[in-house]
Every structure is written in structure tokens, then in C-alpha cells.
Length: 205
Image 1 (cartoon, rainbow, N blue to C red):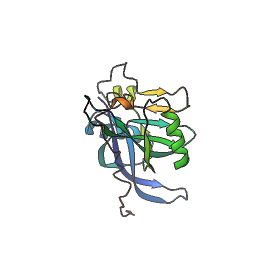
Image 2: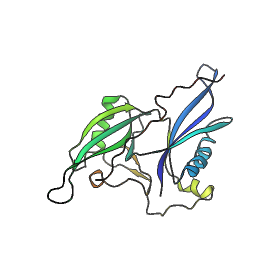
Image 3: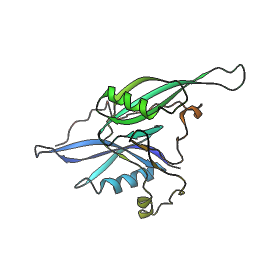
Image 4: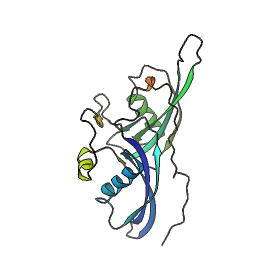
């Protein structure tokens, strides 16, 4: 069973002006456990980051789906809420919250892309908040990488990345996690925690 994890790494980054700066950046990836998440991030970033880097934080992240539009590179966190019918005649309605990530050019564009991506949902919902996410990059599940580092691969029926045929976006869902249609998730109330969005650290020279 895969889940989403936010992994924060620290390394020395070369800026556009040629200077070097010590930075901390959060990445989102699919993994089974915290240990698995740490192993995967070293495998993924080892091909991208030059030099050494350290994992300084890992936290589980609740996110329903991720909509990636290739023409955009900024991630926005979108929260939606809706009422879910309770069980029985006298049962009270439950307010359910779900979080999504979508690439967009602006908050308005993120709202339009979210609306487009959720156009097939048979439920009335509201969008109380859309904020820029500090996530640098998202690493979905990759079966070939899972085999390379000797982990048990998921079943072939658990498709991780599905191409959305109607809106031109890619939908990323961690197999075994929260991937059912939103109106089936009556008991779920989760907030996507950007643990590092308000954190300020002193730069190390």
C-alpha cells in the first residue's frame, strides 16, 4: 500500500547567477513507509542533484489526487468541502474535506483547472482555499525503480499514473491509498499539511 510523503532535503544549490547557496526543499513522493520514502528520495534525487544532500524531514501527506498539466510548473494546493449523507433516516450530514494538487499559472487558473478535472463528480462542493504549494517536484510510483532497490512491486492492476482523456492532464494517485471517487469517501477529513511553507531557516554559508 503506497501513500504520499513530503520529504525535505538540504543541499548546496547553484543559483542562476553562478553563486552557491545552502537550501532546503520539499518533495512529494509515493512510498509504502517512512523508510521506503527515504530510500526512494535518495534514488530519485541522486540523478538530479549534484553533490551531497541530506534528508532533514519526512511527513505523511494526505492528498486525494494530483492533476499535472504539462504547460505549468507551479503547484497549487486546492481544498474542497462537501456534505456527505449519513447512514439511516435520522443520520446527520457529514462535512468532508479533500485536498488536491494541481499545476497552474495562477490561483484563478488553478481553480479553473480543478473545476475541469472534477467535472465528472456527481457531488456539489465548494473550494474554500487555494494556495501556492512549496513542493518542488512530485515523484509518482515507478515499478522499475521499485525493482531496482529490491522492494516488492505492487500488483499490475494498481495503475499509478492515468492519462486524463478529457482535459489533457495527468492524474497521479498512490496505489492502495485514497483513490476512490470523492463522493465515496464519507469518513475522510484531511488537510494537506505543507509543514515547510511557513518555516524559516537561517542560510548556511
